[in-house]
Every structure is written in C-alpha cells, then in structure tokens.
Length: 525
Image (cartoon, rainbow, N blue to C red):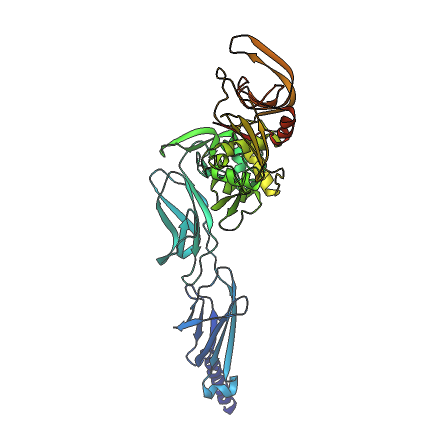
C-alpha cells in the first residue's frame, strides 16, 4: 500500500517538474513582419537583452515590442543576420536551470522580385507587377534612382498605373518595411499582338551619340524571334551584341562607334511590331533607326587648334577631355567651355579679322582642307564623318602638326606686293603682279586647293585668243584658275597677269614650301 502511494507521489512530482520545465521555456524564431520574435513562457522569466548583427558583425539597433524584434535601421535584402537574446530566469528556478537562457537565430533577409518581367497588357489597362512574395515598399522609374513608396499593407501585386502602349521601368521592392529596396529589375510591357513586339532604347528616331548602347527588348524570347541570327547594324561599326536576358539584346559600340551626322539603323532578320509614330497602334518593320547628330563647329575648332592646324591655341575652362572614344565623341556633340588665344605674336590684322568662335570662317575652312590633305581625304573643306573620325583619332593619340602656320596677303594697290607671314613674323615681302583690269584678281580670302611644283597653265586671253604656258614653276591655286606662281617678266609690281599673282622665280621658290593645301591667301587693295 505504502509503495503504491510513493509511486503516485513520484509520478505527481515528475509531472509537476515537466510542467515547470514546459512553462519556463523560451523560443526565438522568424516573424512575418518583424526581424524575429521571441516568446517566453509564463514561468520562463523576463527578456533581459536582444541583439542583432549584420553580415559584417556590426550591431543592428532593435526595437522590442510584444516579443517582436524590429530593426531601427534599414537592412539589405538577402543579407545574413544573427539574432541573440538572453532570458533571465526567476530566482526560484535559477538554482536548478541556471540564471540565464540564451537563444541564437541566424536567418537570411527576404528578397522580393517580380514574378514576371515581360507583361502583356491590353490597351488602356493598368500595368500591374506581381511579386514572388508580398511587398511593403516599391519604387519604379524609367531612368535614374527610383523613389521609394511605402504601402499601407503588404501586397503581392502593385499597379504602376496606365502607361504608354509599350515601355520599360526599373522596379525595386522591399518585402519588409525595415528593408532597403532590392536590386532594381527592368519590367517591360507590350500590347496584344500577333507579331512579336519590340521596345528599343533609345526610342526609334531619337538622337543618339556615336557610342550610345542600343537595347532591343522583345515580347517573346530572343531565340523565338530571331533564332541564332543577330541584327545587322548599318553603317557597319565596331561592336558586339550581348544577350543580357532571354528577351533582350544589347549592342555595345566599341572604338569610335558610329560616324557623326549619319542615320544609324538596325536591320532585323524577321519582322516585328513597334508602336506607330503617333503613339497609337502598331506598325510592322524590319528596321529600327536613330540619328547621330553632326559634330559641333565649336568642337571642330577646338580639335583643329589642339592638332596644330589653327593659328590659335585652345585652353579648356575645366579639365581636359579624356583621351577616350566615348568622351571625345560626346564632346564632339556637346563641346566643353574654354578659351582661344593666338599662338604667335604680330598676327596680321587681315588674318585676325577672319577669326570668329563657333562661326563659319575661312581660317576654319582652310584648316579643314589642310587636315584632309594631310590625312589622304577628299579635300572639300567640309568636316564630314571621315574628318571627324580622323580628328578624334588624332586627339586620342595626342597627334599634333608641327609645321607651324603660314598666311599670305597680297596688296593690289601700286606698287603691288605679296607678303608671307609664318609663325609670328613676315619672312618675305616681294613685288608681284596681279590681274589686268580686264581680268582682275578677285578681292577676298581663299584657301590654297592645289599645290604643284611645275605645271602647264592655259586658257583664254581677254581678246578671245588662247594661251598655253608649259613649265610654269611653283604653282599654288587658291581661287578658280587664279594661283601664286613664278613667271618671267621684265618688271613686277603692276597689273600684268590674267588674275594670277605672279612672282619672280626666287621669291616664288621661297613662298611655295609655305603654301600647302589649306593655306589662306588674302587679296586686298
């Protein structure tokens, strides 16, 4: 009988001990809204401390309320965080189980991403982005940094409102209100169409720089739309296509990219639909085009000065343009500020009066012609794509012409003379002959366009007869049939020619090396 009573008592004591142990426990686990949640049983004591640490070991400030541990600073989605809590047991239990209980939890912060990145949106409908888990904050923007928008309650889908028929936005989200926004993800939407729809960035018809990346995003996977064929770029420029994701191709120009002042096109092997120019409806096409603007006249002058083709130097107001294709191409379209100054002293007033910044003038035209001749280009005085390409290449390589700058000015009043100025000083003044009244030498400033050591000069005299003079030496044509050249005359200093500037042989021989193509010749009274 006594044994039975003892057994009952023992069982009762064991049950009591089990109950005490059960009701004195503490648990630490994840929470749907907070970072973590600590639960202390009625007999477990009190929460003494709670600490959290980031992946680098730095402490994270916490707010503790109702057992929930909420960060007081924004944390990065996906980071691994450690949480430590200490529970102080009541004194009557401390002697048995110890005065404190420690719990540790390591967890990875949730990451919210769009569950679909390429959406089909009926015309006029809102663009709704669904996520793989409820989000508490979102941000979206076409360019630049998205602006965070807090949501009153966590949602699985967020409306971006009514948008254009096609478009792309960078969307970022945070699963918890105390998280930073996650990495932005590009979300694109397309209207309903039987043909694959294309979004291009930049938009078709936009102005682009020679090195602007070209992004093509398709409503269907690239492999389904194009197969293994890649679009052709016209004009053909250096660069490569990259498949950045299953729906997107990115063309990255290399080197100097597309020529300035050209129409750039991407030719597709199969037809696609794009939004019509009106913004309503779709049109089918095989080609997407953009405009590469011409280079700035101001930047043309800056580069010619840096390359030694102008009688002026140019000094930038800020830092120099980096000697790289992309920065040079951008500067060609949007030139930096700076200041021009004359390279040499004693600049003839005739030459100084020709110069104007960022305005067409003969100094600039002559410099372009000289540059074209030096680089084996067609000499027409027009800075086309080939001139810009060569100019920028020279700028990148820091190439500079070292022959100095020459200028010729001719006085038509008696006694007539030619003056040769080079690098700050007049190195020759010689009597010369200009045109007779029936065939006068035209006033004005002209660049030399042909430069030959010996040649034949022929034409028609004022009385209608023809002349043919072989073996004429040191010819520099500057205006139509007018040229500086040597000629055998008994005297010089009066009108005797048919429009040319005639010089004695020794003077012509000295002038000729200083008058390459592009050299300016001014004829004045």
